[in-house]
Amino acid sequence: MSFLRTLQAWLVALLVLASPGTAPAADEPVRIVALGDSLTAGFGIAAQDAFPAKLERALQAAGHAVRITNAGVSGDTASGGLARLDWSVPPDTEAVIVELGANDALRGIDPSVTRKALDDILARLGRRNIPVLLAGMRAPPNMGEDYARRFDAIYPELAAKHGALLHPFFLEGVAAQAGLNQHDGIHPTAEGVDVIVRAILPKAEELVRRALEKRKP
Image (tube, rainbow, N blue to C red):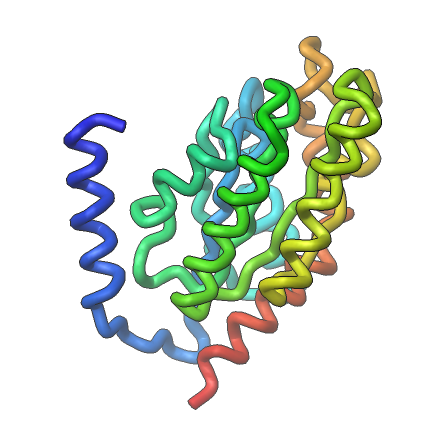
């Protein structure tokens, strides 16, 4: 990490800790940050078709006033998400969707490294009293059974440890489905994002309810 990024992280961290914040009005949209990699960023598709934008519209259609910020960075690992956590999740954030780890598995990063980074992310958000929805990932079959066992266990175990909501597999119904993925076979098409949003919507609604509970005096 460059000196400039380190300084920026330090300054934002001070702001997060020092700012008393202003309680949002009951009718204000719930402010959600989607912290993730290219699957969140919307690699290869239009911005309005990316996961955060489509989930925001789905929640609004279900009667929830929300505003979702797309904090996806293509190529990010769990450690990369941790490194930029403070400036990606500003002080007024009321809930976070964490979608990280796919690149860790694709690169064969030791699952203990991924676990530590996600554990730290959830712990730091917990200290800020921010409800979290953790989107699970699964290791690709070519990584072998031992790697998959260690990697796949990360998400349910950390969700239980930190009291986070869990969506077991972010790409459920989309992974390995040719018609729902781009030519690289990894990134979903706009239609694939629709499948993802439908699957995660119930947990996202629960996340909104948890955030609203935090508003009560």
